[in-house]
Length: 349
Image (cartoon, rainbow, N blue to C red):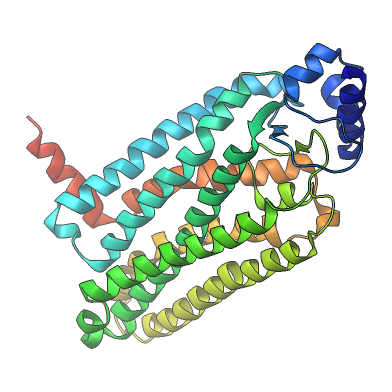
């Protein structure tokens, strides 16, 4: 029986092009069972209880430095986003719509990294691919999609807020009243939930081969979908549709908003006023460039030009590094946030 299990795992590893790199030879039945517990020995496809996450187990020399780097970035992310949430909640100066959206963006970033980073840190302590249960993989993908789509929508809402403030100043209080802001945030979460429910239900009802190795450090959509044996055409169409709707369309709306903002800035006679107006948009524009730039490269890039290492590096950047940079960008480039931070320091005995 264990010979059949060994053959199934080796066959799967060869199909992924990773068997030699990961194992360097044959494994004993005990090792196979430890990596692939619950694997069934049927020759045809079947429902399996676990996946194997490759993580960074093929880059053993980098695992130690990566662990400490990811841990440091994660702690900075937690501290920075928690600080923004606290400041925008307690400081009266930061009770405008822009900071209302910023507070929810920081909440999304906290949940986003917490969905991914603890698992990455745990896997970095092992030299072999780690098993992840079918349900855990589905849950991680679900929250990954919910939070990613919500962030796309929130960044779009923030761009509209800047457009309304600069191009429609007389109607700003009407356009961006509290009810409108709550509706935009609620819509962002609803869109994320609908998209995540659709994708996870489509993907995790597909048949997968025995002992599948996900060539990634998280249960992302494309790496898991590519492991499916049959019936993935409908899911691929769904992913492409979601990519267009939630990456290309929001990015186009943001670019359109900033094109109008740029026109309004150029119409201002005073150069000092132009710099002041532009400074209110530069932080958001930089965050948008980081998020949509890496997401577009990851999900729109042709599959022929991709590699396992490149995909993981890009994903590591927008799932771990970008959430750390957002609070730094908004804090260092925003006088109101810096002023609220100084005021909070004065209040501390």
